[in-house]
Image (tube, rainbow over all chains, first blue to last red; front, side, top):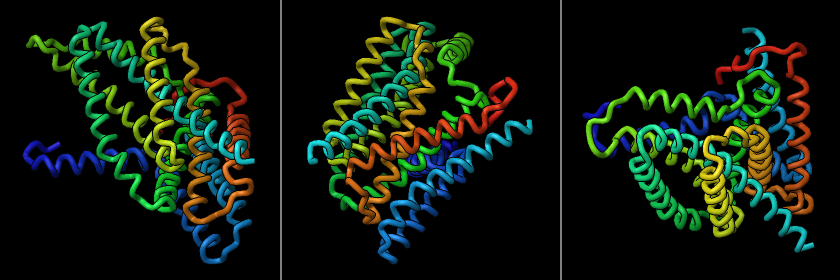
Length: 80
Length: 254
């Protein structure tokens, strides 16, 4: 980290880096999946007013995202 | 009905906060023990105290502010964060349980920290390296506890309960850690992480839905259904990816 930068800039950079690492880190696919889930459920629930569909779709999308991410990591590990 | 509804939400909240706080504090305590044993306890305790003050300042700054955010917006943001965070925890726990990723080893962390510290000379009375290591360990692990307590507690309107449960977990880990010293590796950390992941994804799913005006059948009671569903999914994922033949772990970088 560049010590020539003002303290505020360094603090803001550190804050941004923390949240980037916390939310994206080495699993960007899960971050993108969460955004997609929110978008799809917002569409289903708020635009189409289909509550039952939203109740079913939300956990299914979360499970699918987790499964794909685990499968991706598992395949990469088995290839090594 | 009301009592059942309240108790379901409270049970899941208490479980999530307690387990998450315990896991993070075991990790922090391992680093503090390594620093204390290697470089002396004074600087280690000073680092711990400074980290606790910094964490308390964060809570004081952001805690009251969160109360003023509209509940549906707060639940959507918190739900999204918990969903991502919980899926990350579950992914790691599933990979560890299946043997494709090395399990978190407190003994290895302790030995690595000790080896790192033994090679560094201290030039002053106040051991700066020990202070920074202890501060960093407690602050970074504590920050995850603070985020869990603030997000779960505020969204459930039970910030006091969440903070109390986290406090109890921290004190319990400190007492047990002081008694058993270097035996923290016996804590079944991966099973606890799997449970925390299930609870975080449960709350994440539930609050993303609440934030988007989804009406869950049975209201808060539906949390228990999510706990069961995600637990079964994790078991299925571990079974699905577990190698047929035993293989060496630590193959997954992420």
